[in-house]
Every structure is written in C-alpha cells, then in structure tokens.
Amino acid sequence: MYYVQDEYVYISERTLKFIEDTDQPAFFKDVCYKFQVPNGMQKTATVLTRIKDNLSLRPNAFVLKVLDYAKNAGIRLSKKDIGYYVLNSLDVLSGKASPLEVIECILEDKKNGISRLIKTEGKASSYDYQHINEQLNYLELANLIRTDSDGTISLNILEQKTIDVFIESLNLPLFFSFSNYDISNKQSVSAMHTDWDFYYSKLSDASNEFSTSLESLGILTEPTLEQKVKKGESTIELGDEGEIYVFNYEKDRVSKVNKRLANKVIALGKTKGIGYDIQSVIAEPGDRLEFVKYIEVKSTRRVTAPNLQDTEWCESINITRNEWVAAQQHKEFYSIYRVYFVRDNVLIHVIEDVNQKYSDGKISVTPMMYRVDYGSEAIDRVLGEKSNA
Image (cartoon, rainbow, N blue to C red):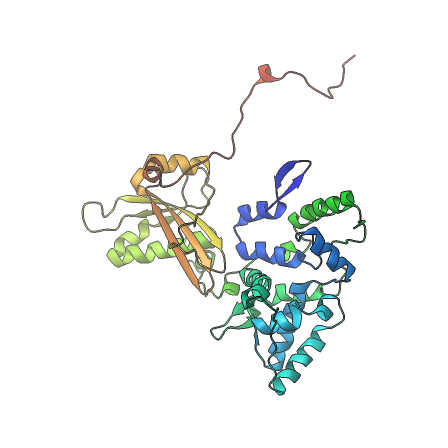
C-alpha cells in the first residue's frame, strides 16, 4: 500500500491504480504476481535463513501450475494438499521439484490411500497452516482460485488468460535479486529491506493484463446500453458498467410502478459537470411520484461482498466537487449508489440524502485536492527566461 524512503511515507503505485480503477482483484493479482521466496517482508533472520538455504521460487505461479495439472488429471486438491506438497516443501521452494513431479507424487499418494499433513510438534494445526491459508486467500481475492463447497481448491478458468501469465513467469529469474546484498552487513541488510519495499510497491510489467471482467466474476451481464444504441433501442448517453447496471435497475423499478414514467430515467454519465450519472424519479405512491431523483454511481469489483455486520468495516469513495455540490443542492433527492460486482452477484449499497448524513456525522467528507487560481502578481520570479539583450 505504501513504502518508506528517506524517512518519508509514499503511497504505492499499485494503490494509486486501485484508487483510480477500484479493481480489487487486479490489485491482488499484481500483489501475488510479484510475490517470491525469499522476500523482504519477513524478519531479517528469516530472510537470511532462506537465502542460505538457496530458496528461490514464485510460489503463486507454482500453485497455479499444480492446480492446472490437477484439473487435467481430474483430481481435486485441498488446502492441506497444497500446503504440504507445495508451500511447505523445501524441494519445491528450492527449485528441486517441478509442478509435474509434485502432481505425480500427489497422484501416487492418493492411489495408495496416503494422506499427508504438516505437523509441528507442540503446535496447533492453525500454526502450521496460518501462512498457507493467507497465501491462498490472496489468490482467491485475486479471483484466480475458488474454494469449492467441499473445501477443495480449483482454478477459476474464467481467468485463464491471467493464470497463463503467472505460469509463464514460473521459469523466469526472480524479479528481485538478493545477490547484490551482503547479508552479514547491517547497513546492506537495511538497504535490502528498503529496496524490497520500493520494488514491491511498484506495479509489475504485467499489470496491464490483470484487469477483471464481469464475466470472470461469474456475472452474466444484460445487453449494454451501447449494444442497445446500435440496435436503435435507445439514444441515451453511455456510461461504465456500474452506471449501465443502475440505469437498467432504475428503468425496471420505475416501470413496475408506472410504465409511462420509465422514459424519465435518463443516463447522463457522459455529461460533464452536473454532479450525477442518472436522473430518475421517486416512483413511490403519493404526491412525490414524479419528483426527480439524482443518482451518482460508484462501482467497484471484488471477489467477496462487504460484511455489514462487521463493526470495523469502513469504505471510502472519491467524489468530485461538482458531485458534492449536487449532493448539497438536491439534498434528500440525491443518492449515491455504490455498486459491488462480486463473485456471482451484484450488490448496490444505497446512500440516500448524502448531505444530511454528513450533517448527522454518519459520513465524513475530506477535501483531497484543491484548485489554486492566481495572477501575475503572485509570481515571485521566472526561471529560464531568455534575455532580449
């Protein structure tokens, strides 16, 4: 998320991208892609031990290749299988065993009814599998694997293109080399950790291939507004997938109350400066039936839905000055629709009367950018100006 350099904390390149595109699986794909053993996130003693043991691996790429072999062999692997045969195997971590050799070993053990587990004397099983579970959770958040109902792990074949990018990196040299550091020198070790943090904060060269489609999340989308325009069904402005989803939702909601009012649902996402994406109507029985409703759409993609029962849960979105002015101006008739494209589902969190919720302290609004207007009287000096002499 961030890195420290010269005693200053900087937001990472990857985090800036996530703030821009809100593609959570793409964020975790890049995190998983750059992860390696050894790495600079561990304690110095652990890093030194792994370097001395000649460990060198991209474990996530290895796991995906093993799962690919398992799929082709018609077998299903559990977290414990992946933990024992891959993530806790010194032969694998040191590059002595290939994915094919691992799957052959698994097949042989299953044929003979042998079940293997990681077990550390004097420790609970949670100790042995903590880091394994964390690593697999990251792959799941990246939308590359799925935990099935029986607890087994399978590839998300809807992400095959990205999976192939991972697998192709398996035999490449590690992106971050520890050979340039003197592990017996404290200053060199400190520089190693600093350099690692900077390296890991940067986007990988493959990051532009990691975008997450709705199809890869298992969401079957309706015809887009663009497709409808091509068919002559609509002349409304086009927006992103979130706006399209909310537009279709509003059309359906309003038409169920009064079909005549459905034409009052207008997509305005491409209209600059008005502060909202969709103009709709209240469409509730009573005097306010045709009152105008203004909707700003903020969409994101992720694997899991937010847990609203979690008291620690908090979400952030970015809005423009025009959107905030519109919220203040239209008050109870202005809403933010937060659209979550999650695995096999679409959720909308509706925040109505944003201005009142701000007044009530239910939301906070923080200015993140300021426009500075100035004239010639503010200029102290001009550098690089050529003399007319």
